[in-house]
Each structure stands twice: as structure tokens, then as C-alpha cells.
Picture 1: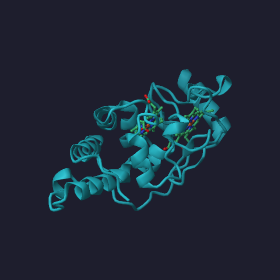
Picture 2: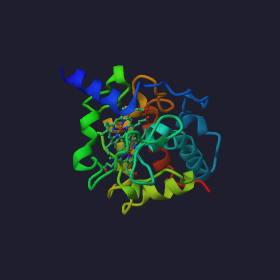
Picture 3: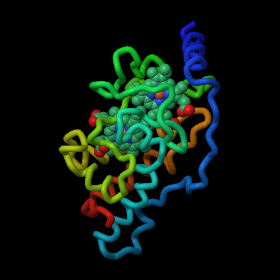
Picture 4: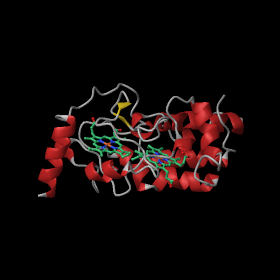
Length: 199
Ligand code: HEC
Ligand code: HEC
């Protein structure tokens, strides 16, 4: 019953789901060990962050870390349709709460992503339109990363289930490169080598 209502609502508001053209970027992530040939730890650290950047700049992540008040959708990160806004807490305006459409799990018949905590990253955590070097400085900054230590940041990237959605995004969406575990391993190795940002 609930599913029927949701499907009707989604069809009404957004039309039929379409699978985006899948981009050709690399699907895999290099391991921390594969950077062993870079002798200088600072250079190695920055190189590992660049590899992790394949994830951070992926549409699956950036669509929820937008610069403005609207989420983004799809491989091209177009503005969210229907128009929704972040609201006071990232969960949407009272009349257009994310959870009206985004349920506990992906709803593949209508192509709607889902997760119990589905909401927008706060404005200070925006990654859209930023260079990887800028994102690097930002995610290390407790004033802009939710007060996280570097260890907490590694833990969040490697184990948070909302982050993990990006590797199981449901019908018509290309997953983030590699696996969440591999991304967590890169983040950990980056922190252990000094969390150096690329230029
Ligand atoms: C009225 C229904 C509705 C509401 C409310 C809604 N969404 Fe969506 N959202 C959708 C549908 C349908 C899709 C899938 C369409 C697509 O990706 O082309 C979607 C897709 C997305 C995506 C794209 C994921 C990706 O990587 O492609 C994000 C991000 C998103 N929504 C965030 C939000 C957030 C955050 C909120 C609350 C502020 C919200 N949505 C509220 C219907 C809704
Ligand atoms: C459905 C929306 C959504 C998606 C998809 C998403 N995030 Fe987030 N992200 C959030 C929210 C909300 C927060 C704030 C949570 C908090 O501070 O507790 C956040 C915070 C973060 C933070 C900590 C703050 C910061 O910006 O440094 C990191 C790191 C992060 N996300 C990484 C990722 C990565 C990596 C991906 C993709 C693999 C991703 N996120 C996908 C919503 C999302």
C-alpha cells in the first residue's frame, strides 16, 4: 500500500525514472600499498588523497554536499526535481521533508534512493564547485567538518552507512569507485602519513 502511494507520488512529481548515461571514469581505487614507491611521506600522503578524491568528487557524494540549498541528481549533478530545499536541518522544508519520498532503503521501481538518515550535508560541508585541494583543507577543519578529529573522519568515510549508500545506490545510478572499505583504508593511510593536502 505504502509503496503504491509512493510510486504514484514519485511518478506524479518526477515522471518515469531514467538511467543516466554512465560515465567512463575508473571504477577502482588503488591500495595504500601501491603508493609505496613514493619515498617522501608528504608526497605519498598527498598522492593518496588524490586517489581518495575520486570518491569525494564523485556525483554520489557531491549531490548531497551541494553549494546551494538544493540537492543534485544524477551523473550530471543537475538540480533536484522536484524542487526541494535543505530547510533548517538538512531534512527539507516541513511540507517537503526528504523522507516523504526517500524511504528507509532504495526504492528501485521508481529509482528513488533511500536510507533512514537521508538528508543534506550542512552548507559548511559543501564540496560542489571546489577543487580537491580546497575539499582537503575543509574536511580537516573541525569548524567545517562537524567537529571531527582526523580519526573520526577516517571512521566516518570508512564505516558510516549514509556514506556507504554511495556504493549501493540502486537502479540506474553508478556506484562510487572502489569499495567503502578501500576508501576508508586510503583515508587512514593519508592520515597516518600526515594528512597532507595536494596543491
Ligand atoms: C517529492 C519527492 C522527493 C523529495 C521530497 C525529495 N526527493 Fe530527493 N529524489 C527524489 C527522486 C524521485 C529522486 C531520483 C530521481 C533521479 O535521481 O533522477 C531523488 C534523488 C535524490 C538525490 C540524487 C542521488 C544521486 O546521486 O543521484 C539526492 C542527493 C536527493 N534526492 C536528495 C534529497 C534531499 C536531501 C531531500 C530533502 C531535502 C530530498 N531529496 C527530497 C524525490 C524526492
Ligand atoms: C544522502 C546524503 C549524503 C550522501 C549521499 C553523502 N553524504 Fe556525506 N554527509 C551527509 C550529511 C547529512 C553529513 C553531516 C553528518 C554529520 O555531520 O553528522 C555528511 C557529512 C560528511 C562528512 C563529514 C563532514 C565533512 O564534510 O568533512 C564526510 C567526510 C562525508 N560526509 C563524506 C561523504 C562521502 C565520501 C560520500 C560519498 C561516498 C558522502 N559523504 C555521501 C550527507 C550525505
